Amino acid sequence: MKISVISRIDDPKALRYAEELVRALGSQGIRAGFDPDTAEALPEGKVPLLEPDEADVVAVIGGDGTILRTIQRLKPQVPLVGINWGEVGFLADLEQDTAFTFLSGLTTKPPVESRMRLEFCLEGESLGQCLNEAVIVTSRPAKMLRFAISIDGALTERFRADGLIMSTPTGSTAYAMSAGGPIVDPKIEGFLLVPLAPYLLSSRPHFISSERKLEIGLESAKPAHLVLDGQESIDLGSACTLQVRRSSRPALLVDVGSNFFGKVEKKLRKL
Image (tube, rainbow, N blue to C red):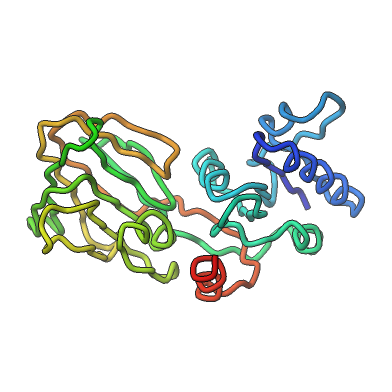
């Protein structure tokens, strides 16, 4: 069994925990090591390295941002499990006091839950992918954008708003929820569209089957950005049309046996 440990590097306590975890796993005969960024942040010494793409499982110590950043960097995707070291940590299924017991009991082929990601294309070229959401926002604060939504080639809606969230079901409990979108079971695959501060009351969230052809037209002369999982910002310029599709490379999350709706109750209703 090979486990690559990735830690947030801005917290010395998280790094110390990562060292203790790797040492404890090694004592159980598990090959455990750090990715290069985590290893570089650790005190000088003999630090075991294990690239994520060489591992059976990637264990990420951090909050949702650290997990999303890791998934963005994984090529190809590797089964990943999060150890909560953030505030909510909705994507982190393990706590610090239970992580060692769970990881030491894993096999080389752990139970995995596939999570849909979105891919965005412009003029046939891929701009990137996301697990939670992508957001189109203006680069000029307090300015509205004009959007045109087309489904299967038919124009379905035009509206003005401060921006537009395009979320997966996994991301429905993140920014999309804060903007008034519904909570969606992550076992369902579809595109969730949530306008940000729309000008008209009739502009409501839409949930669209991932089997459909979805295009987002940006009709404003104002410059805009596409932000992927809060990690990467891409300059879209002004008028353009984005193609949104289900990625052929879903994220792979290790199934720890937690109930999604129980997690909603615990992490989002009782904070």
